[in-house]
Amino acid sequence: MVIGVLALQGAVSEHVNMLSQCGVRAKLIKEPADLQDIEGIIIPGGESTTIYKLLVREQLLQPLKNLIQNNFPVFGTCAGLVLLAQQESLGGLNGEVKRNGFGRQRESFESLIDVEGFTEPFHGVFIRAPYLKEVSSDVKVLATLVDGRIVAAQQKNVLVTAFHPELTMDNRFHELFVKQMIVTSEFVDN
Ligand code: GLN
View: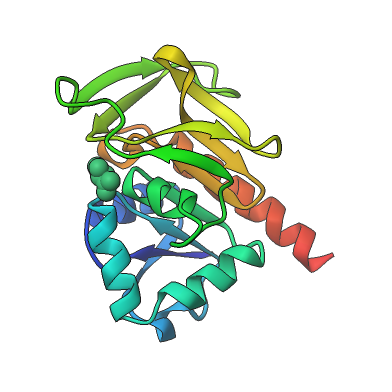
């Protein structure tokens, strides 16, 4: 199994390391031709406006959008969540996103989070993190913080976290993504 990691800007190598911990090969995605032979893709954290501009410049926006619309498995962290929640950008997640949602005082913070389906809390590393305000009924909320701010969610083929699992030693979200991919590909094969 090979998973792509969008490698235009942001925390790329950390995701590659996480995937190798899960026994999965990673392929860096820099241009449309790289999208061949991957079974899923990670959109990393970084700066979403910059990544958006680079997606347009490298002619990756439309091919990726099409893949995502056709149920291609995608995992977005932080800026990746922003891009997936903005329909004019990658789309795929039906929700309203608030960028830099935790304001100045809490630009960066860490918090233990209860995640749906995990028996132990997850160490969330938040860096100028967004959150989801409202999501449509087909979005499964996996974790919330204060005031019901949604910080992890899943909608069909799309998994998102507002925090950075790749900056921890905990690969449970990457494992969840890999498991989700296997289920999706079985579904597609049948
Ligand atoms: N605030 C950034 C944005 O909106 C995301 C920050 C991050 O990915 N750590 O792009």
